[in-house]
Length: 122
Image 1: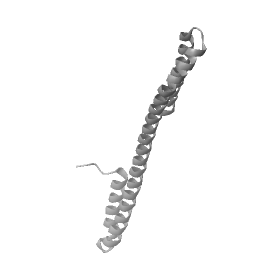
Image 2 (image 1 turned 120 degrees about the vertical axis):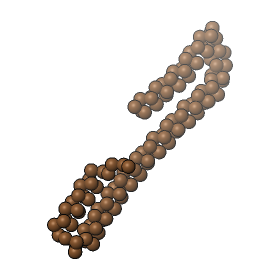
Image 3 (image 1 turned 45 degrees about the horizontal axis):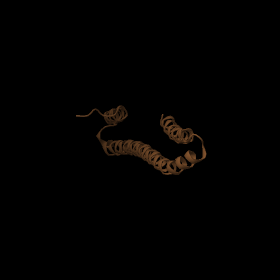
Image 4 (image 1 turned 60 degrees about the horizontal axis):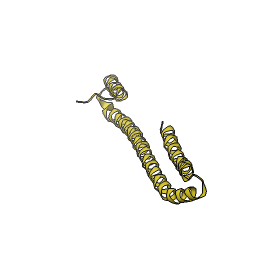
């Protein structure tokens, strides 16, 4: 058996105390007031749960988008890395220096993107 919310328990105790004071002729009014209050509390809780679900869904969607963007950047980096490697190898003497500089830049861009994504998630 679950423990009732303290506010609900307090409302029920107040309704019972009012019934004791006012007598059975006011049972319908006391019950209606209590039912109205419990419905209000249930609606509040439902709104809180919906807000929480929406926030969790938004965070999950943002994480998926971030992963997809990182994957796209990695694919584009590899696709552009091939012609950049050819150009850098042909234009610089010795070619190894041009290749290392061009791939160093590509790696730096990917690392900066990955680290920036981690900072945003914190």
